[in-house]
Length: 131
Image (tube, rainbow, N blue to C red; front, side, top):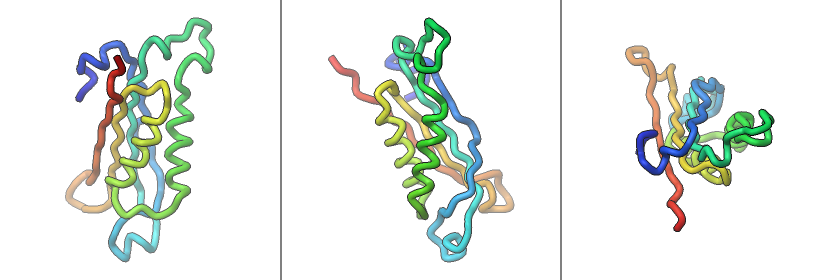
């Protein structure tokens, strides 16, 4: 699924790009002893019908702080072994928001290997259309 999916044509895309956090993540012993730098990206697809302001007020849209607060809350729960778990958990939080129709979440660990920019994971979900 992409932004060009017909089910998303009436949505606006909100995003949080390259949110850099330091967190305990990894399965190896050396990864369990300290924090690593992780970049988190989130895209939300929100129907225009519930995200088009008429008064230019924050309560008319989905607040970006929701994305950041959700990530901070997940990190506060402690060590994560896998990026897949991190992405799945953040995705579930995003999809629980009533205004969100679809979401994409990715994480990258940029300091794992010296010969590549990053290793990472990405996941996408879309709510079923209701009749």
